[in-house]
Length: 159
Image 1: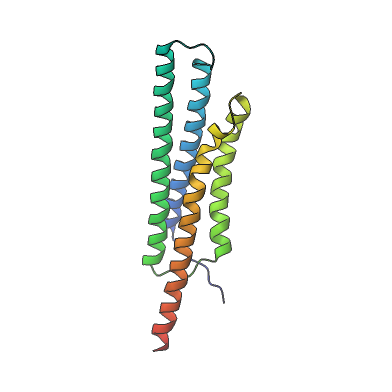
Image 2: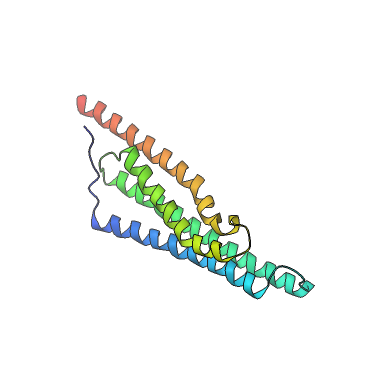
C-alpha cells in the first residue's frame, strides 16, 4: 500500500521559496548573458573591453553558483525535514515528477533568452544542466533513505 506525505504548510512554503530562488536565479543568469552580449558583442573588442566582458561573465557565473547551491541545500533541507518529522514514504514517480518539473521550469525561464541570442543555446541552459545531475543524486539518496527507513520501521514494529 502506497502512502502519501502529509505536506505541512511550513514545508510547502520552504519548497516554494526554493523554487522561486531557482526561477529568479535562472532568469538572472540568462538575462545577464543576454545583456553582456548586447553591450559587448563578439567580434572586435579591445583588450580592455574583453577583460570587462570576462568580468561580467564571472559575475554571471557567480550568480548561477549561488543560486544552485542555495537551491540544492534547500532541497536537501526539505528532504531532511520530511525524514525528521517521520512522514511517510514518497513514491519514486512523484519524486521524479517534482524534480522533472523543476528542470522544466528552469528551462522555460531561460529558453526565451536563448532564442533571442546568436550564441549557443548551451550558454543559456547551463542552469538546467548544472542542476540536473545534482537533482538525480538527491532523488536517489532520498528515495533509498526513505525505503531504508520504511524497512527499519517495519522490522521494529514486528518485534
